[in-house]
Image (tube, rainbow, N blue to C red):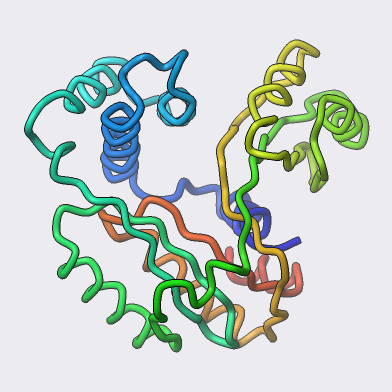
Length: 249
């Protein structure tokens, strides 16, 4: 287990969201605005917007906030100024880190990210330095409830998932990007609670980190995620599950 699923496990053990609620709403609102600006305000015809709105609803973002975020896409405010950038670098132990950003000030953002890498035991790389390690995947997170998680995993596979990570009371089902909605809908129609569905960058290979480097990497990822301009962070570090528990405490 690595990358998205490893980090998701850490957060579940911490019992915490990515960031404070107000900051999370800001990030989600920005994603909705940019998605609507690029693909139009109709969520049925705009897959990226549909996913962004779904994530916002899962985070209990008020409907008025979602509506305003869509409306900003046609205005001349923040949505028009935001720029999408992907930063790449290496963390402790040589772990690859991919950072998706929405910013209105490229210079400020890259300066802050470079500083975090330097202080966190890593270094910011050139464009293309680590992107090749990752590939786009859909991931559906479902709660098994009273069902056997193995059975939920098999249902996801039958619906088109390529692979599943089975945890205690939940599964993460990985799909081709175009099959994400199909798998999500199939699980919901089977009466299974889906707690998340999104596109992620999944590592094709991993780097195992010993405890000291693993904890350093976790701390670096946390600090990067706390930045207002950062939308998502992916990495290819792998480490013992005991380290995850200690990092969560």
